[in-house]
Amino acid sequence: MQNWTPEMWQPALIGLVVGFVLAYLLLRFTKDSVKKQVKTEAELQKVKSELDQQKQHLEKHFSESADLLKTLAQDYQKLYQHLATSSVQLLPQLENKSLFENQLEQKKPEETTTETENSSEENAPRDYSEGSSGILKAEK
Image (cartoon, rainbow, N blue to C red; front, side, top):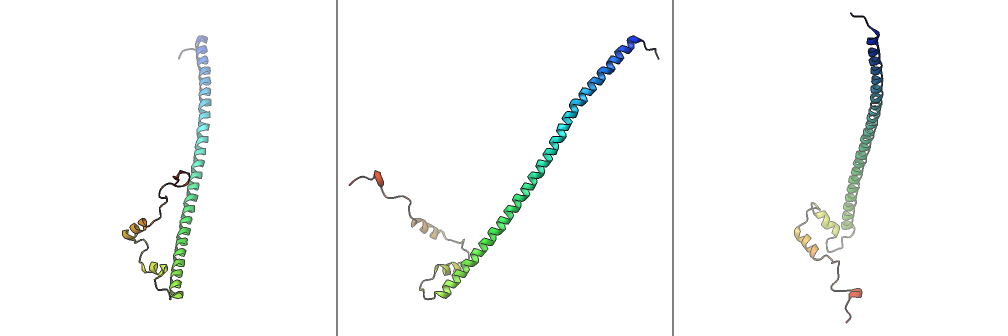
């Protein structure tokens, strides 16, 4: 091993100081970015958990709404059947079948023929008049 001379100590000492300064600056900049990254990841996890919780609330809401609507439809169907049977029993003097009785005789209300649809379309009222009306009407 050689003896260290003062000319050799100076560059080694300067290199050591520059190394410490560079290491300090590097750690300082990376430490802040690491802190920001950890903070951002924590915020991201928080937002994800809030979003998942909101999705669960929405699913629960729509599930309950669907159940309530199903119950409501069943109750309306029961009310309709009650009114139909009551009208037949309470008003037997009617010669023609009542609307309720006709509906009860049908197996499925969705089974409609195209003939009844076509005839209802032909007899449907129009939403316009024949010719001009109002201020555009030609005077006779």
